[in-house]
Image 1 (spheres, rainbow, N blue to C red):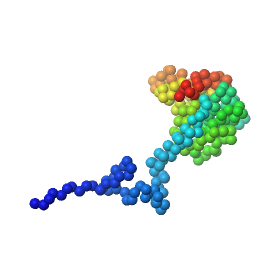
Image 2 (image 1 turned 60 degrees about the vertical axis):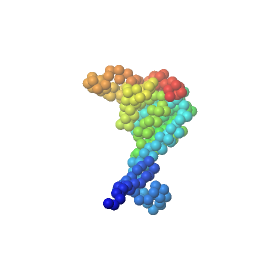
Image 3 (image 1 turned 90 degrees about the vertical axis):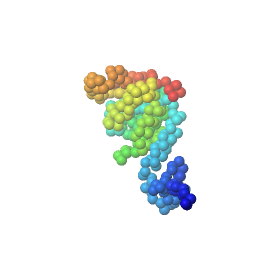
Image 4 (image 1 turned 135 degrees about the vertical axis):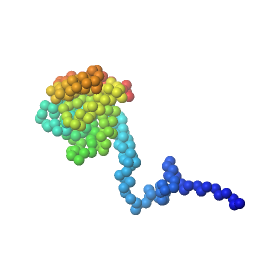
Length: 254
């Protein structure tokens, strides 16, 4: 009788924390693929590489805004034109927030965002713009003192909430509504606390508020007290008072 043969060990390859066997073994080594200048460039479009880009956006945003003083995020339409009541209100709100001791954060674009940044800068406060990569975006407005551009909406929205003590929401479109409902959801689910939200412009927001009360709440899809998560006003001084009265110093909120 011959000596029993040991079962053959499957071919395996270790690439850092990853183990590959049999048909999944890749040719070459990790270093070799890294240093090979002739290789395929499709890897820059893969999900693992996107994760690194997402991580880098969080790092850049955290690094740029970590030492920001207490701030309020101001939202509104990029299509708001100068010499209109909405533009004037946004500018006055930006100025009043600085005079109340807060920095002003906007999406960094034109329209209502530009107006709020302009008011903050005129009051010699900190004017922040968090831009987004869009095919039709016009870049950061000239009144931004600290600007960060993002590829990903969800990273940008994290910065709006993390580095602000409250929101003022002026008339705006789908992007403004997205930011508003993100904030309402976070407060409703207690993911954030002490986070006042003020809607500026009663005529503009009336239809939305009526729908929330008469359809969403009446249909049992939200609670009556959810309507207390936000305030509605037409007065700049009241808007600033409402959004800042619950917003304590940043050290206490963190």
